Image (cartoon, helix red, strand yellow):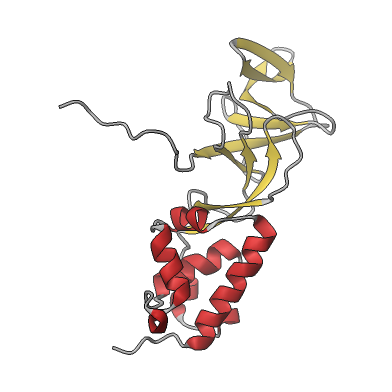
Amino acid sequence: MKNRYNKYVLKKLNQVWMEYKAKTGSTQVQMANAMGIKQSAFSQYLRGSEQGGIPLNSNFITKFAALTQVSLTEFGLTSGIEQQRPEAFSMELKYTLSGTILTDKYCPVQSIVPKRNCYAVLVDMEGFILHKGSLIIVDPDDNIREHDGVICKTSDGPIKVGQIINAEDGWKIISPVWGNVLSFKADDEQIVNRIIGNYYPEGSGKVYKLKT
């Protein structure tokens, strides 16, 4: 059966990949994990069927376009696959938990959020409740209600993560830090956004096996 996607599409995919890799520092392993495939399969898709690789298909192209934030029309495609909800995309890395300046601004992730304008906070230090390398997923447009998990960012301070409560003296954010619980006021001079989830990249440690 003849592959419906021509050499132009394959060439464009490789061009976009090289540009995206240079821009974000992403690796084939990261891309493959976000797309739910193995790195070897990702590489074979880019190689193309005529060079012994895997023939392109709608599923791969849709996820690849979503991750690299490129419209399918740039690949010369106008079919209905562009209307499918992407299962992976490129998440903006906006902050780090420690306040360190980011060098990479995007991270390919599996789709776990409802909107593209959500962003992530990178956990870049040990000792936090989440493993180093994890992402805290934040929706800047979602309503915030009492007891929601939130991130708080001031103009000159590091990110604070905690739960927002309505106390007698106003709104406060309760934040567990290094075994202690800190409390501070939430005000209009701060960026306070709602946490909607966490993303855990694939670990590199030993695989856990249940005892039989």
